[in-house]
Amino acid sequence: AQSVTQLDSHVSVSEGTPVLLRCNYSSSYSPSLFWYVQHPNKGLQLLLKYTSAATLVKGINGFEAEFKKSETSFHLTKPSAHMSDAAEYFCVVTLYSSASKIIFGSGTRLSIRP
Amino acid sequence: NAGVTQTPKFQVLKTGQSMTLQCAQDMNHNSMYWYRQDPGMGLRLIYYSASEGTTDKGEVPNGYNVSRLNKREFSLRLESAAPSQTSVYFCASRNGTGIFYGYTFGSGTRLTVV
Image 1 (cartoon, rainbow over the protein chains, first blue to last red):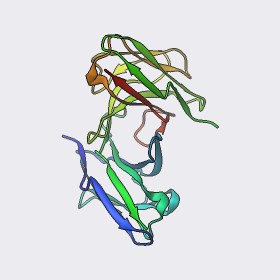
Image 2 (cartoon, helix red, strand yellow):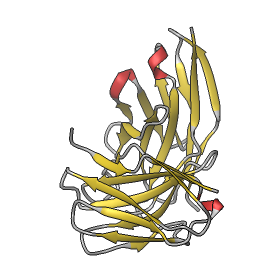
Image 3 (cartoon, helix red, strand yellow):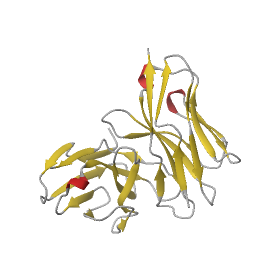
C-alpha cells in the first residue's frame, strides 16, 4: 500500500537555526513528491516538487529537499529559519499507477522561536 | 490575481441544511478537486473532475455531490449537512492529471455544522 508519513507533528526551532522536516513514503512505483506550506487561515502553496530529475530539489523561500530512494525519504530543509517560516508543512506523494490519486501526509507544524 | 477562488470563506449550518460551496479558477486548468482538511488527517479527496464534463469520487465522497459547471467552475454540494462534515474545504486545480503536475489551492471554506 502507498503511504506518506511525516515523522514529526510539531517542530520548534530558533530563528537563524536550520530546519529539518522529515517525510518518508511507501510506494510500489517511482513517485512524484511535493512539499506544500500552509500559513494560518490560508490555502496550500507549492514549495517544491521532485519528478525524477535531480534528486536535490530547490524550492521557494530557501527551502530544499533531497529524494533518497534507498531510504524512501524526502526530507525538507532550510539552512536558516525565519519567523515567516512558521506554518504547517505537508508532504505529498502522487502515485504513478493512478495519476489522480495523491496522498497527503498529516502535516508538520513548524514554530520559530525568536 | 490568477488563482483559485472559493466562496464563502466561512459558513455555519444547522444539521440537515443544504448548501453549495463554489470554486472558480482562471488558469485554464483542466482538472479540479475538492478536499477536506481535518486535524491530524492531512487532506482527503472528496471528488475530482479530470476534465470538463467528468467527475469522479475520491476517498470520502459520502454526503457530497459535485458539478463541473464549465471549465472554470467546480461546485461542491452538501444536501443534508451533518456534524461530521465540519471541516475546512479546499478546492484545487492543476493543468493535467499526470503525476508531475502540482496543485494550486484556494484559500479554503471553514464550515461548521451544529
